[in-house]
Length: 127
Image 1 (cartoon, rainbow, N blue to C red):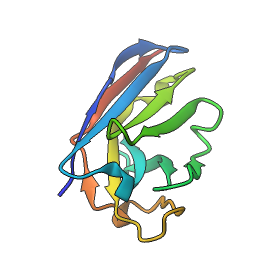
Image 2 (cartoon, rainbow, N blue to C red; image 1 turned 180 degrees about the vertical axis):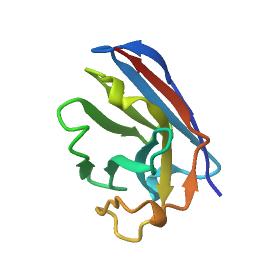
Image 3 (cartoon, one colour; image 1 turned 60 degrees about the horizontal axis):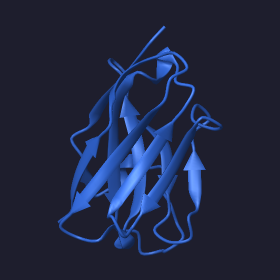
Image 4 (tube, rainbow, N blue to C red; image 1 turned 45 degrees about the vertical axis):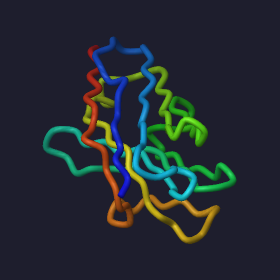
């Protein structure tokens, strides 16, 4: 079992930045590919970014390209999401998730393939 806890959410103005953290306990994140997802009110949960277990292969949704950066520090058992140039449409609950991918350099954008989820952290961007 992996327990994931997100932090770092909050309220910012348009153009501001936030850094989300996803701290894991129970097992080492080295064994998992990771993803950040978000869900806005009335909308389905969507992938924001994903990163492979090994090799640092990444996927960024079009909405995140050029503004968001995912990174992982396996020594700290933590994954980060740096979000810059935030827009009101980025307002959502952000979730981190882990999947025990058997392929080291594979990431997945399919939320149904993720085994563990955090409780989410709210990000609110005002115009």
